[in-house]
Image 1: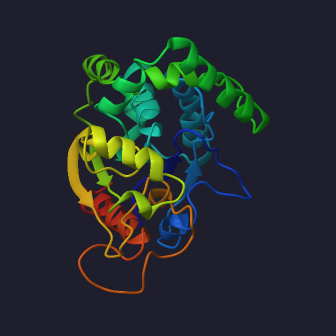
Image 2 (image 1 turned 180 degrees about the vertical axis):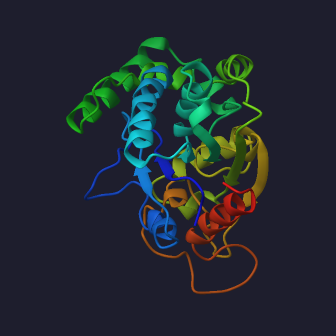
Amino acid sequence: MLHYPILFVHGMGFRDRKIINYWGRIPKVFIEDGNQVFYGGQDSNGTIEDNALFLKSRIEQIIRETGAEKINVIAHSKGGMDMRYAICQLGMNPYVASLTTINTPHNGSKTIDKLLKMPKALVRLAGFCSDCCLRLQGDKHPNAYKVFLSFSTEYARRFNEENPDDPNIYYQSYACVMKNSASDGFLWLTHAVVHFVEGENDGLLTPESVKHGHFQGIVRSNSRRGISHCDEVDMRRHRFTKKQGEGVSDILELYRDILNTLKENGL
């Protein structure tokens, strides 16, 4: 059992829901170990600033409810950026013991840099369509266009300068990769594009894009498909393969490793 409760912070495009949980079987790994588990619940297409403000209130609520001095945060994708802003800009650093990120674009995406050179009207249209869909799903303040901009390498450079790590917080990051574009039918096109521009990736981001703090390396599966951005949060709700060998056969193995690392650090 960990010393502090766990807060799961989701990424872009999906929300935490009671019926269809963003994190699949993953929270059960921590609950079975005796830990208290909570969820962020921020907008799926909200800006980093808006989502960080929501997470601030969520953290304060958890501290009140549990009486805990701090929390451990596990964040996927953009959720890690939301959380870093809340820590550094909104005064949440005294209440966070650790921040674990899985494929968070800490260093931006060179592929996004190229895509943002497309006509601005086209990029804004894509953002508008996305926002309309996510308002129907519960987002209060979606702003996909601004979110797209926050994935650029220049934005990441400025963000990292303005939001330095707190020395009293344990930061660790993980990267995952697909083995080829056929590995995930949902992300085959994006994987192919990112692979062409940057190299191996999880369907959206490369290992170089997501390195931050104590980088724990690239997590690979021992199946033929690898680990996609969707697999990282157990979207399919089952193991990759029954085979044993080099690499993980179930994404839960990654989260058990995260749990053990937090324990080893007294968190």
